[in-house]
Image (cartoon, rainbow, N blue to C red; front, side, top):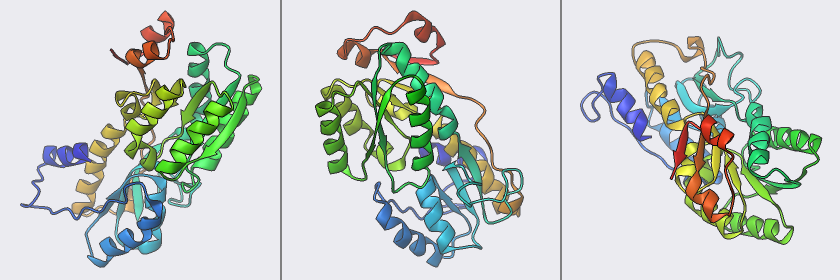
Length: 281
């Protein structure tokens, strides 16, 4: 959220002077979201800012009048957050992710590093309503290539540890972690578990690779929060969220952690290094 604050500063807002933020954190525990949403709505704030599909769902149930700006929502139309991307029509707007559409790319990139890949673990949080569709997309694309897929549901730290043990026992050869607020909060733990269990790991968010994961391909989530500040500015100036088009991702970046690759005993193909937007040494 630091980039969100910087985005507001760039637009002339100074915290404590012309705006105040009431922070609430679920720390990856989605069961806390309804209560936190209720608290914020009870404060009668001017706008609600959040990230992720689960948080959006909780806020949507808590209010149909207070504007909601979501920096990282999945399939806003399919999840019932908007009538359309160009004209949301309700009290929710912001920026969308393209997690499902990226699934084929994630499988393709993993195969470049693990050419003989035959078994893949997919780490999901089924408390996130967007994850079943993403899991289905990954499974479909991987199976076309003869890759066996194991879907693993993790909603807390114990679930992460348990599922990595399952992957080790089943001799899974690589893992994809679907983008999720809880997984990002546990990014260092996930990176350590993947390395400990000798698993090449693939993510959507660059933050995972900066924490020690192997590779990511997707949107810049920090930039999404910076751009969300522009939505807040427009709403402060009188715009209705239902009239503000939801932005779709236009730029995707590939990040590789070469230090992690070496620790896993993997050679990164030169063609992949040349395609990378960022290589962490």
